[in-house]
Image (cartoon, rainbow over all chains, first blue to last red; front, side, top):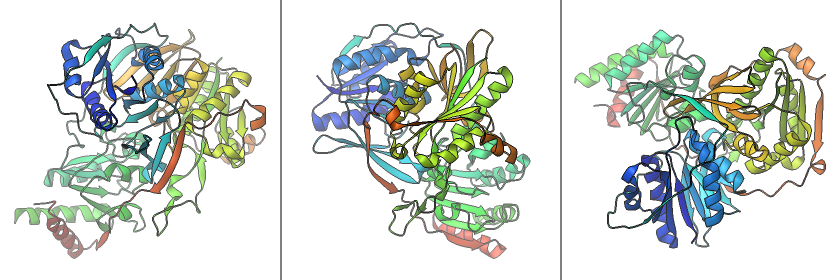
Length: 318
Length: 255
């Protein structure tokens, strides 16, 4: 029986994908299949989350890479002929999806942010293009339709413990020439800017690394966190890359965002679109950030920020 | 000595895209560039040639105006270029691009290592590299931020994943897609540009290739992202900054 497949390497991602699958399945009367790593009794969580069938992947060897599963899942998909396959748009997930799509000779919508089923059954998918300047709508002309969904785009599926489903184990993967020889977990910055209520963003207008303290002072005052644009983390290495805000970095949604010396390239603006109030300090009145901002100060951040700190201190102590 | 192929795409520079009064995308003033991360791919190929010798071939599929991009790529340390050229090639979908590049590599370019950018600046679908590897039946390692070729004919790479880094090794031939952290692309000088004109370019017409299959993904619409914010500008004077802070209070974002 055709249906909707989801594949994710982690539980939180699988539950987000189940939200979409369950919504579509209830419209179209389709079966939902979750392909997930075998981690003990977790299958029940996915059944409660909306899956009718669970295909379990046996644990991979320490030196095996996630993509070892591609041939196994491709073979299953060729047999079962699902209508739609959803994967999480993580680094490994995107690579996995593109290679699976090549094997299944079908189209793939990468980084899909919205997905709707038309009356005729066509699935219309939305994604960002041109660094976030445009929204592209696509449909897939071949079967199965495939999409990768960025993490945290959809809420995790709520549990419905009355549901039931089948559980089946997939055959083990063939050996792969790719070997993982080490996994290094990065040291996370102590702050999590994706959850911050206020974000002060450091841009290229900042002249030296020590000056980030100016931003930090402002952030401390309004109980916010410091983030940065791509050149600051990638080229200058002044801040770790998990603080880099933008299309290929993190997306933030604070109540207040203040960009200090941020020019406002489209890729960066895409990462702050969810902010409630966007403010910018930049000495170039033509900087694109002012088109994306609610409030702006045209001036040198080195002159403006100390004054701003002082005024904020006055305002917040009243 | 490795034969290295670096693939690139000649794309619209998104910084020049305007939004018309009606909200439609305005491409009238656009300029073109080698897609950002593809510049890292070419740079990495040139860097590896500097260490190990061998050859660097750049490869692209595009419309005739991509010739400018071919010259740009050759000025970045490549030895030769292959250019699949057809007016229809500015609208290729990832699966089609991968098929064209795959056919050219298979039939004309000896290779040990293929390097692609992690995704293009225009579509950022991040599919051509992995799909190309599948077409050629070779391993693919994506999002590589550090690459070493060992003497045993294997490569060792660090790939960026959500939790940190995976150190991975694989035998050549292999395809990697590179992230911008891997290097800083050079800015070609006048001499590089002059030398680029003398390097061989093999142009391949659509008729010389197997029929390019139909697109599997169809673009139904492309609209400008709405960013409806009316920026109120304040002067950088003490009075202006005081009014700015008042405005923040009115919006309820500071207490």
